[in-house]
Amino acid sequence: MSFDPYELDRSYAGGGETIGQYTAKTFLWMVLGLLVTFAVAIVCWLTNLTIYALVYVPFIHLIVLVATLVLAFTMAGRIERMGVGTAKAMFLTYAALFGFTMSIYLYLFEFTSLILVFAATAVYFGALAAYGHFTKADLAGLRPILMSGLIFLVVFGVLSLFLPLAAFDRIVCLIGIAVFLGFTAYDTQKIRSFYVYYAADPEMLSKASIFSALQLYLDFINLFLYLLRFLGKQRN
Image 1 (cartoon, one colour):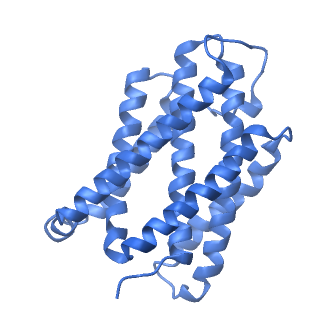
Image 2 (tube, rainbow, N blue to C red):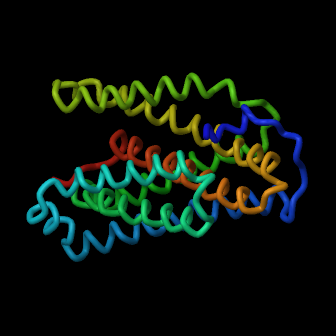
């Protein structure tokens, strides 16, 4: 499935919950995912589990990366066929696994800097989410631009593994910040589209909420990481 509500018929309306309640539920799932991620990160950091895993488990960071990618693509590709409980479990598992990756940043950056950047991320994310929710403009036209920006970021990330591209890092961070701010507004507006389209199917509506929560979770996490690279103060 494409899971793109901008391509769907919007003939359904109504439902057992209001659009405000549905949107609030979606954001609560996103926040729960963030809480799981940062809780796991802090536990791994405090117990030095991250260090032990990196030392004693070969390629653990690659294993976690592959596992999170598999979960994300499985949710995107098979969410119509999985149960609501399965979708919720996969989302929370994804958040927990990413907590291990996030714990690495606790060793690299000063804790005060992490807190300040997290606060800045919350402010920027909240502002663009509010814009996406309340604006009457159709943000569907942003998708090609945002996807082009995302592809650029992925390609740059891969190339930076083999080429000395550190001099361009701050420019790329600004592009990343702009891309995920745009995705925040775009994905927030899609919540309403999912609500309208799936209002007659409560089970699909619930799964669409989890899918939207995953998208917003990724928007927040990526925005946080690019802001951290741009503004964060590394440990000496």
